[in-house]
Image (cartoon, rainbow, N blue to C red; front, top):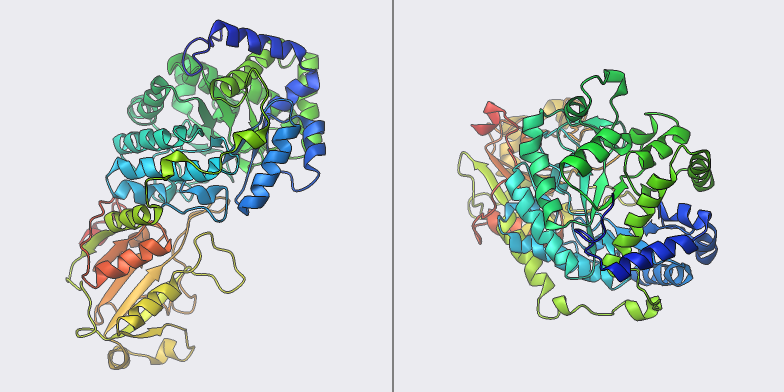
Length: 563
């Protein structure tokens, strides 16, 4: 029996009665709409709200004025205030392009100081709230156990469950103080498999005890703290399904987004979660390959999940749910339970009120929490305290114009003009700053004849040191990201490192030593924003010490890399 008087709702009897009365006045179509948290429409905003009555809308980053206009327009048209969600994982840039890129979670963890995780939530929450956002699909509480996983990586707080829990709690605090609903993800936990759930239903293959002591510990702690919303991934946890149903067959295992065992059984009964459960995006391949959508969508609701994130064909998806309700595939009891959780979350989090207020009055232009802080100073501090010197076996650092004036700069991962890269280019910053310091910089461009004609002595005549900068980001909807050298004999690889001092700097992926384990000097920056690049440069020339502590194993378990 759903109890709204306890965490995470803590509603009073009059508020509970308000929700019951609200449900009684809603039409079937209005109720169905509440189950969907859709992607933002591009046009016909008012017509969209009137037709679909969605429970929420997720926004991708856009210009702040446009985002604010769209949110106000749709909120004012909606009979029930919407969840306005965004991926505020690394800063306010998760919803507005002008927002602050505070730093990727792994960079925050490398500072070892949770106050920066609080500022991640505080700054991103404030910037998001100013345009009307009220929900964040963060913190990410996945554990980066598998360095080959292309989706966790720098999006996580690392591989130590206690560090993740500590950092998540502080990020949650910052979000809540700015009236942003935190949503932890991705239950039952990503980061064990090396595959991306955007492309395939991935597997959390931990044993019962290992899961309890890691992911289970994190989720239980945050549930006990009163976390209001959890995102459920398209991720299997077979050991728990076997525990809860010993007779289950392997072909009956289900990813959590359609598993009654993992949601009603593990999440709700065992972990005691009473709050809102939302799927990860149901447009993902990892969701759709399990079964047909006509079966999947009802299975998701019946599993104990309350909201469906995104859609394929919106009319088709809505109709699937409607037919499932009318036919009894989704019971009225389960339907009403999901709706009650949605409305209770909105009421307890201050989105739904007993008296309707115009959204124009709700969006504040400024947040008190940012009035007494200097955002630029905070971002600089994070960069200063996070950049990590993984190894410097031959003590090449610090570099100087006197010792090594001629630099071969090899940049990996930056895109050409017109290409897309979330973090932008870092090569020009390195090039320009090194030249400003007096170094003679030559950016590597492959010459076909050099592949077989350039020798070590030729290089020694041209260069005193080689600096590799890798800005190779991991991202969703792709497989494991590795260094892809030029196919012609890997001509741009540091084949000469035994003869010419070579430094490798990563600004985006902390695991590149797996592909260059023999290098003697390696640095991780975790985030490719300008503040981090500037901090790296200050450190390699000796103006600052390296303070960052690696939140993961940068050696990837390779004994060669550790030497």
